[in-house]
Amino acid sequence: MIVINSRRPRRRRGGTLATLWGAGPLTRITLAATIAASVFPLYWMLVVATRTNDVVGSVPPPVVPGGELGRNLARLFGDEQARFGLGLVNSAIAASAVTVSTLLFASLAGFAFAKLRFRGRNGLLLVMLATMMVPVQMGIIPLYMLMAEIGWTGKLQAVIVPFLVTGFGVFMMRQYTMQALPDELIEAARIDGCSTWRIYWSVVLPVLRPAMAVLGLFTFMQTWNEFIWPLAVLDPDNPTVQYSLNLLNGSYYTDYSLMFTGTAVSTLPLLVIFLLCGRQLIGGIMDGALKA
View 1 (cartoon, rainbow, N blue to C red):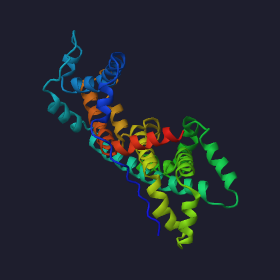
View 2 (view 1 turned 90 degrees about the horizontal axis):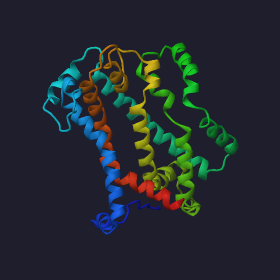
View 3 (view 1 turned 60 degrees about the horizontal axis):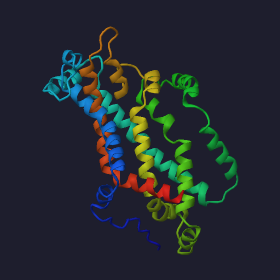
View 4 (view 1 turned 180 degrees about the vertical axis):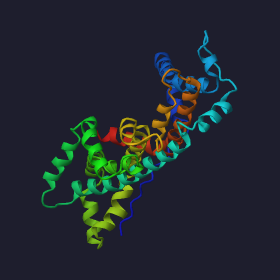
């Protein structure tokens, strides 16, 4: 039986920092300015989340964190209209379900389109590619009518089931499988007596691990940050986290400290996932760049 070793050779510690330290002054200044511009919105979000709304609107505005984070968190999770805790749970369920199903179905379909020969393959591939050409906004009204007809409006499955697999995910897995998995490896597995399912599980999945890390992270982030469709199909009694953030915005008065506290809390899961999957994510992106 063929064993796929997807582990990468260890990189020398400090290699990237040593390379950056040896770069020219213009490069270092450019990198420092880019990092500062990228990190400042997150820092400002934390500053506002730890202040009261009156202090945020003062002139000059505060530039260092305050001591009101606990009070703002209590107000955030105690807001009966926004239901922020329920929104976090719903978003975690929806994003996890969509990510797992997308990785499963996209890897299966990508493997089939790339390496299997069956009748109608090219026609099905064209249909799948055509789904990528239609903007999501154009499908909101007919999709809402469908959800209303089957009685799913206001329910969490309405933001999960329609997005269990995407054409982009299938196309990405197909392209990566074609480039990373040689036909000889599959033929060798068949000579060893492996079925198609065993080849998918033991040969294809280990090879696809970097690409699946990238697709999984992007899918989770997209589902977690989705706002328009949950706003259209759900109701305030069963919101997602982005819907809850919208409910924090009053008609005549905006509490920026409360909204930024909610934004900071809703960002934490994405940062944790990025830290956990960062190595696989960078490896997958670099593999794609080198193959391109």
